[in-house]
Image (cartoon, rainbow, N blue to C red; front, side, top):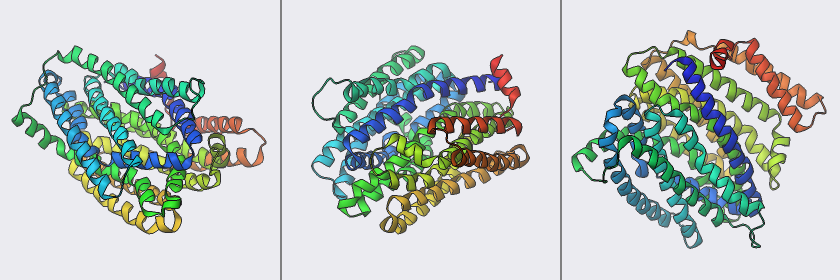
Length: 481
């Protein structure tokens, strides 16, 4: 893929997601929390995070393995697809057994279990949708994948929007309605994605070949392990908050953490979208021994510009931004948000260097890094949560993300041969300092409304990035052509 084609596909994917997903998270998701309250949403968020901890059982690494494998050998899709579909159904059964067994051990009962069932079902549907999309992106059908990537959220906006603001019911909004809307949206998106894959692979009756399945599981297990470990240190915080703190404050602290975390999670959509294209792209280029440095450099520049701009500007404007979205526990959410938002920078670069190591087959390194950082995260949460609640979890999250990013970068330099001189660290540091001064001045010494202040700060970020050549104008000209 030429560099201009890469930039075009990234921009298309980002554009479609920016049209849909921010409104879904910042409009619908926040609207739900404001309607049901921080304590009820905090319980939902804790159970949601708990179900994500078992995604290794649900996926067993087949999505990333399949994406990398089909990108290199597209002719295998027709033979591999029916077998993996059968395998994933079996893994779904094992997933439900694991989730409910552990939930009973840690004390979930009654209403918790009812909500857990539907959230776990949504996790199964979402994982299946991601597997289907891995086939589509592996075939380099990035435009089709871009559309399907936002379809479930677009449907959620319609369904939840009607329930939240359509006056179609006299009953107060319930968190169960939110979960059921997700179930319906995932199901429709799966039907569309299945039709696309079957058009390429051809229809074959699902079958189970033990020897082929065993080979797939053996090859995909390292992918599954790294997914499990990374999910744990990314999602374990809210579960530990809800379980470690006294019952009268646990759900509330989890809700406060969810409010701050949601904005980070929203912004993390952009670097995640990079990885969607980068994994099959790197896999194909490395196999064909093509020069990946231009793509690595372009990705580093764009991700650095985006993550630093968002983190610095939102840190400076943290109070008006939190007040803009939330009605409850604003002061506490601001204290957590000012810490957790800086995790966007290492998280964004992790999607670059981690994806590069995955495509190169360096899963051993990734698993060692993830395991070590998970231990650090758990220990920090055990120490900090009882004392500082949600703020302690934010500190643990930031430290963990920074450690993962640094270690992955070191291994990428050593294993893939990314030269340090090719990445503009000095310009990036200068950009950060100048942007902070500009944003702070706008916030502190001007009377601009929040929306205008944020717009002016972002304009400063764009100007500084062009002056410091953090964003390459020549690449933008290629995109225009």
